Amino acid sequence: MTNEKRVADAMAQAPVVAILRGVRPAEVAAVAEALVAEGVRLIEVPLNSPEPLESIRLLARHVGSAAVVGAGTVLEPADVDRVADAGGQIIVTPNTNAAVISRALERGLVPMPGFLTPTEAFAALAAGARYIKLFPAGLLGLGYYKAIKAVLPASAGVLAVGGVGPANAREWMDAGVAGLGIGTDLFRPGDTPEVVRAKARAIMAAVQG
Image (cartoon, rainbow, N blue to C red):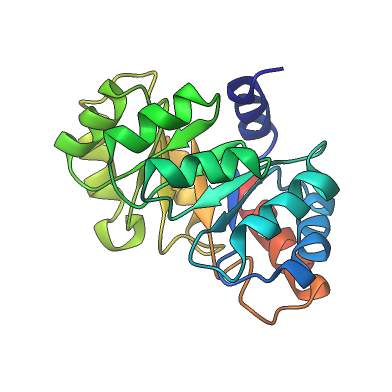
């Protein structure tokens, strides 16, 4: 099964990408298992976390059959290669960088580039992205998203990331986003697996309405 198909299937089951910023290799497997137990099927480790590639390797080993894993805050094409070699399947970026998108596609990974403006959104789609990440969604608001959605092709899967949590997740889903990227409302450095599981349960309940 291709990574694109795995991502599509995971999104259909649970349209949530867990952002484990600051997670450490010693805790990542237990944290991921807690997320998977509550139905989360997409997990990213931002590259500005401690030893992120080791965490991605551990994720691929421990939950790779149940979840799609990869990296966030990917800024350079060379980082894509490192993530692919570590077993990652998704490449999430804070910005629109055509070179990163192209390299991800060349390696068979699924890019999820960040965008702010319509120009960036269309540039990301032109570079081959299927999913694009509106960031920071919470600050921009639903009205901003709806205005952009009106001009995007129907095939574009928009993820709302930044400022989205249990209190407003359902609003974003009802507005038509393909999924949500959730950070601190799922994991903060130091959270135990039990805390993460409780947070995941709350997020999933909100998303499922």
